[in-house]
Length: 381
Ligand SMILES: *Cc1c(COP(=O)(O)O)cnc(C)c1O
Image (tube, rainbow, N blue to C red; front, side, top):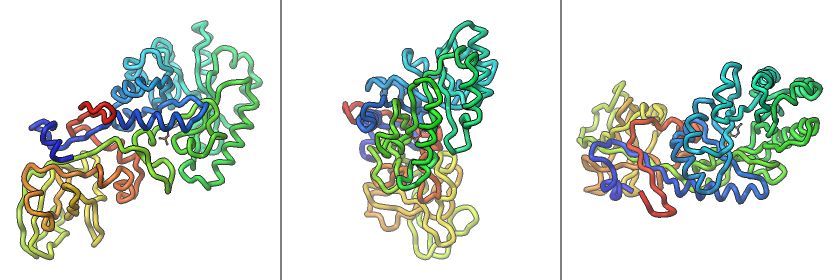
């Protein structure tokens, strides 16, 4: 909310990313309820989809979330500091040589090929310590995971299997966001079949979208990411509560007559006397360049108190120009805050406009904005 921003933004801030940790906790509770009897973990890779892993972990720990997934060991080591007792899994797996770091910080690798399983088993044997790890099975995505052929070898290699402790069998859905896609059922069946070959072990298949496919997909542990952060996990269904807002400040207002051009390329020729607001925000802040207006295609809209202002011309690295001619007087002034993401434009709206997915919008939101963490649950900033 621009008026509130005037109070809480630093005088030096030119853009502000507001992150609502109360909404994050609300979303976690909703997904946990949806997960029914399965434990609900949280995927906090890529710095918690850009919102900051440390804040996310502390907020989610308040809701008693005890299991976290990150992509890399470096991310896991950072998260360990904020979650001393949680189970932390590294999705991108394990390279021989990094064993001591995994072991010392009690991080669990997700082993996604027979080669990785063997490396982890060798490390554990060497340490004389049967350390825990997850095993990922490839049920059709062909990205990470043991195919059936490797599973067969593994289950017939008791020396490998008994040198470490498999604590989770998992796989990942390729099309969970499309509820009618037959790939979901195909992967579910493949997962059940492969899992049955192993001795009993907890299992996990569902990401955010998978939770909404129903209990058959939940197994023992669900792994939501995007839905936690307010993204629309399932096509055609509403998202949970939004947690990020992005506002930028108008650095100058000026008028230009019809016939003048705006921005790089001088492509956009004004068709009327226009009031132009220049915003301190650009593609270096994660506002993709393709969101500019070109070839007669509209681009993104900024909003001031709900009034929309369309972008004019191209998006620069650090600047965006908006047409504020039609806004009521007094709203668009030097120093005014403009909503780019928030009540009137969601992460998914911006993604659709940019021809991408909300995940990319969230994880691109840069580091230049002042970050303000609020908690709508407790009303604290
Ligand atoms: C990223 C990821 C998730 C979380 O997916 P969302 O669609 O963001 O809920 C879960 N599992 C794995 C293996 C992942 O890579």
